[in-house]
Length: 309
Image (cartoon, rainbow, N blue to C red):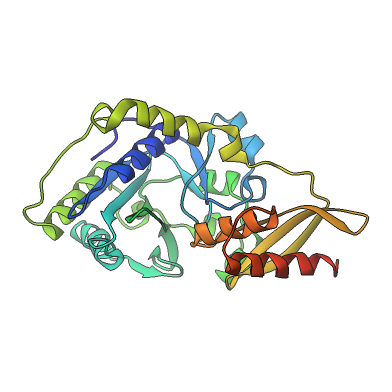
C-alpha cells in the first residue's frame, strides 16, 4: 500500500490500522511520505531532541511514533517504509535484504551499521525501528532520498555524546541523502524499486491497494486523532527540578524528577532505546502503576540514583 497524503498523523493512523488488520500468513509493505515533520521515538523528550518552537513556527509538525529509537526529520524527499507481518512470518533480516536489493537495483551500494541504521559512505541514510503487540510485528524505517541537510541541522538537537560517538561535529554531517551518489534519484524511483524487491521476495503474494475506507475510516480517524493529540506528542511535561544522566538497558538515558525536601514526588526516564515497551514499563513503575518485577527493579535503581544528587 502507498499513501496518497503527506500528513504525518494521517499516515501514522493508516499504519496503525494496517497493523491491527494483519492476519496469519500475510506480509505487507506500506510506503508513505510526510510534509515537514520531526518524528521522535516513543520514550524521547520532545524538547530535548527537537527545537519544537522553531519547527512549528516554520509550519512543521512534531510527531511521536509507537516504536522506540531516535528522532528523525521527515520531508517529501524522505521515503518511509513499513513492513508488517504476524510473528511467524516476520523476518527483519529479509526486510533489510529487500531494502538493500532495491537500492542496489538503482546502483546504490548501501550497508547496515550501528543500531540497524543504513549507511552511505559512512554517513546515515536511514534508520529503522520496531514495534510488536498482539502477535503482530511492525518494522518501519526511513530512506533519505533528497532530504535537506539544512532542515535536519535546524530542527534536530542530538546530544553531544551522540555526535562524538559518530566522530562528527554537527548533525548535518551525520546524514547522507541517496542523492549524494545518485543526483537524479527520485522518491518515486526508490518507491518503485522497493515494491519490485518486495514482490520478488514474496512471489505469488496477493497484491492489494487498500484505501483508508477499506481499512475502516472510523478506526483511521480515531488513531489519527491519538497521534495528533498534544498529550501523545509532547508528553506530560512535569515540573521537574532534577535531571540525571543515567543508563537503562545498556543505553544512555535521562532521568528527570521533581524532588521536594528530599522526597521524590514525580520521576520519568527518557530514552531512545529500541525496546519501547520496556521503557514504558519502567515509567509505569516510577509512577506507581502496574509493571513487571524487572521494570520495578530498574525503577528502584533509578530512584536510588536521585538520593545521590
